[in-house]
Image (cartoon, rainbow, N blue to C red; front, top):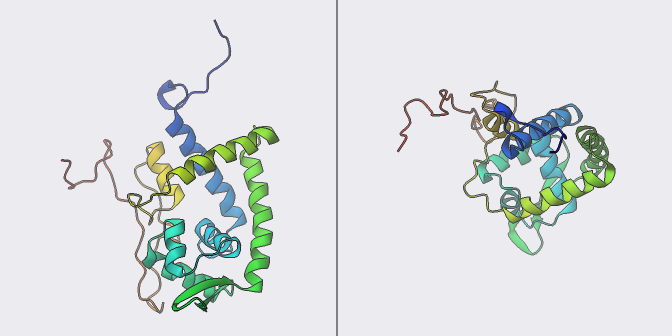
Length: 211
């Protein structure tokens, strides 16, 4: 009989993947909050900037589809990155009807520094693993993520912490600055507030049909 202790999730169940994934996601998001705090929209802004610098999406719409972000939400995310001087909208030479999102020199420099900080934060979260194990974990997770890129049924308005809270069984979380409605002075009008619904102990939204 094995005497090795088993890793257990809530209620003492061993190897609870959802619980483990939720805890890891919250730890990762928490670690990144400190290093991405000055970047507009934090981790989501980082994803956009990284994709703009390293990718080759022909338009803002293509960028939104690639990242699984609602196109109306992407508009104000890009607006804020433009205002911060990190990206620009430029005509696509191949199709003048499209606007490409291009990183500025400041945006490229900023990303290089942020990538170093993010790597340090990631290493801290994965500290219990050896270097080779970290690389294997990241490779496997990336493989699974790339295989489920159809995000039509995913609520892209939610940030990762909201998803993690649902996995961990929390009923609600405080509204962050990223989820509040924007100032009316924003050129695109008020931004949609991203507030998770209150749920009862069974996880149901009061008043919603349960089918």
